[in-house]
Image 1 (spheres, one colour):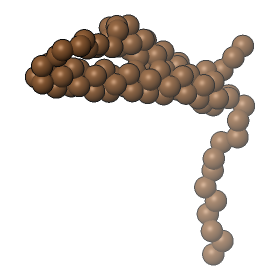
Image 2 (image 1 turned 45 degrees about the horizontal axis):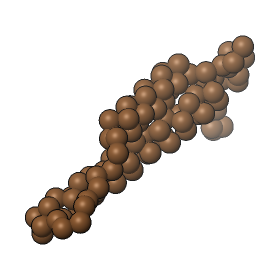
Image 3 (image 1 turned 60 degrees about the horizontal axis):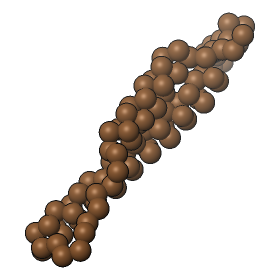
Image 4 (image 1 turned 45 degrees about the vertical axis):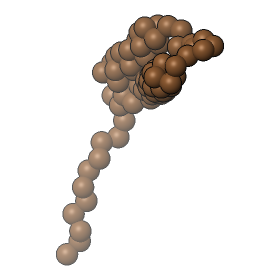
Length: 91
């Protein structure tokens, strides 16, 4: 039986799912064609910048979600672990 913290594990799964959904919704990067006007070039550059930002976002979401899943396997305190107790200073 593996000890996991279910809240952290669920958060990690949710972040991975959100990253995958964003990644799938992006689709193909915007492409240009020959003979574009200056306004179309500027719009293309803005669309490429937004696409790159979304790629960074879903990459970070998937990465942090994966780390949360890994952390969840060691985050739960075992039942037989030692309890912390404060020692009173000697007078």
